[in-house]
Image 1 (cartoon, rainbow, N blue to C red):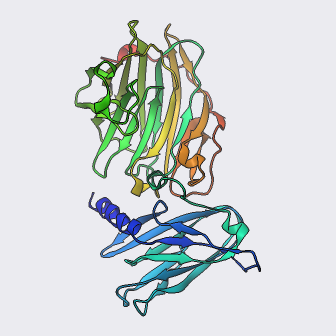
Image 2: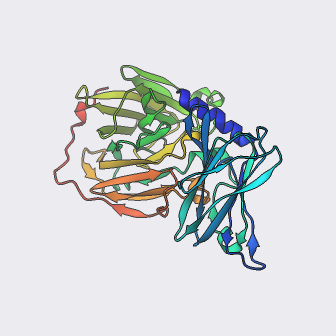
Image 3: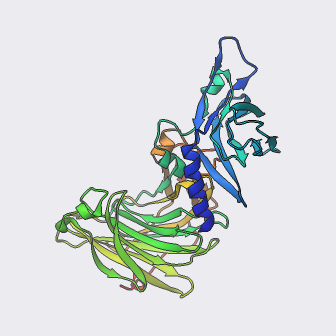
Length: 415
């Protein structure tokens, strides 16, 4: 956690500094020049710490071809300070400010051939600075970055979802499997596997030393503060599994939360089942199980009762998000497979269709590093890290059907 704490502290320093990036195309056209600034807040991260030196990296996306020329403007309290500036991961250019007077230093140019993200790395800089350029309006106008948008959400990056249309009959159980490839399990990731209209369940990377299985159910009373929920509208715990922690959550709606500390591994398939069943008295019970491959058995996470709710399973989906802003520059990818729904009369139905969607960060166009689809019989979601491709919201996909029949015995799910 020490490195992460350093990153958070240094990011705060960068946000306080006047860090701006302006990019432009050249050659310049008479009457067609323009300038644009990209602030560090919401667009830059500390990507490397090497002793006392830190590297701040900033990304922006250019959607039209052209040549971008960049320069560093800096005023250093310590004129002997050495700064290295690298554009698009090329060899860094050394800059030695020769006085405490603000000056501008060219740092390079890059030719854009197709829509792509551009990375600018600045190593050893401890003062406020800008990256400055001028150029054609049409190229400058094509640059995408976090602006006129909350920096917190821009830093977190876009969240992406895959929805699974359910059969027309009442659905009681939803079965799904999640697989995180090695290298995609960055700190701050939530690989949500079994979502429903009133909550979700999946696996998280909470720190470099802690991982969780999380199951949450929202209260019908809409608030971000759990303490505001009236007693008769609180989500109540019915049961919990061995070692499971139970409490409340807030900030993104409020309700009942449960989690199991579990050191899950990448490159491993994990299985989940969630159950939604009305009790006939105006309430609905929500229950989640996780198959522990180390114990070779199903484990109860928790069961909650939600008041003022009379519903079967609805809104089956999965999602991928990063919940630590300083980690939004790292790419994540996850696979979901073998989706099945069990109707209230005991019939399992395979779900082979998926619909991709994303959040307000993606919809605003301030981050365009998001994707989803179907590969090798599985659905996938991908986000963050400033990769160039993206998937339009509303895209529909179909995975290959499983070759073997599915007849899971729900009696294996112990309460």
